[in-house]
Length: 413
Image 1: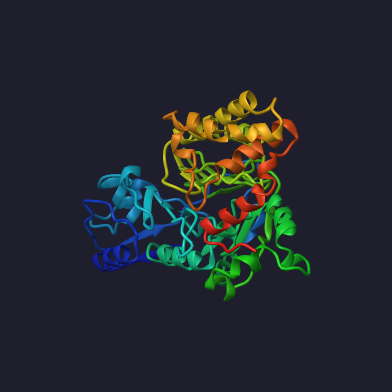
Image 2: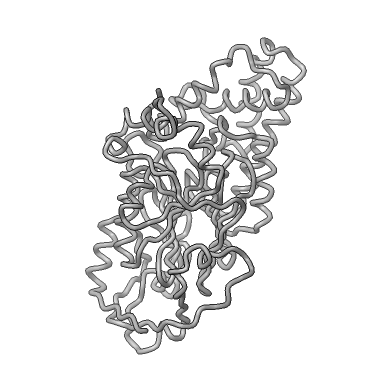
């Protein structure tokens, strides 16, 4: 089987730039080339995507030598970056742009705004026969991501992973389904949706209906829960690229999943790791989150594509874990032995202490801004350590949920 690809490279480059796809410096268009399908590598002794989806059995690999054979070969954006300067450095990344971080692997930084199309960060991996997307975003974000993928490849977008159930990561599922994509998630995502999406699973308005009050794109779409679920892991492997979807444990929610690329040492972390003051703790468990981050750290990622904020290296996992550990230590030392009425007075001293730690300061929310997650984070840790709620913050978790929703482009009920 031979698949021919002949394009006008200069026009394609312009199109990529117009659609917000980063083109590496030194790009020089070429002519045409052909690609040869090869016999797939043996599948590992795990549950692979081939076992779940038999129609994807034709996998293939293209070696670097074959790819460059023939003189004036057309270079894909991945190959161009690899050969003419490498992936876009994290320091040069820009929100709203699709950055090549390894051959065939892209990262798109979203924008935390109630007017943004793409709110969460996205990623995608271009396999030989199809594309796997990390997170579905909102409907408007899904359309944006699909358009950017289409500027790079015409391969079908077969699968989209919901890293968890929150709307800015999963509400775009219906748009992807309409484009031939199958939504995938950990079983905990369905459990959480059944809890919060009462408009879909019951007879009361739930999270989707509340969010639709503030987002036009939701009013024109509908909730589509993931239809392929895994309890521990699910692997995609065509011999060239391998992506392991893994549930490492409870963290941001009870259904978090990450996408681990062992060959490239890239981790798409979802919201178990963010890069900035974006940690919402209302649907998770901070103590278990620390342990889950430990499992993520042990993977040895060199690049971490966070759920929100700029991508980074593996240090961001250490930093976020250090933030939660420091908070637990401070709450335990200054609040755990105090009555709730007295303990609440320690919130701002704890904030000041954590702000003074350069490693973790960026995770600490600012007092007085529209979404300050810090009081609710302290409340959550205090409750986990003592089983008690802070008297002045009895309503803080619900307020935090509303503020989190607004900051992530969602309305609150």
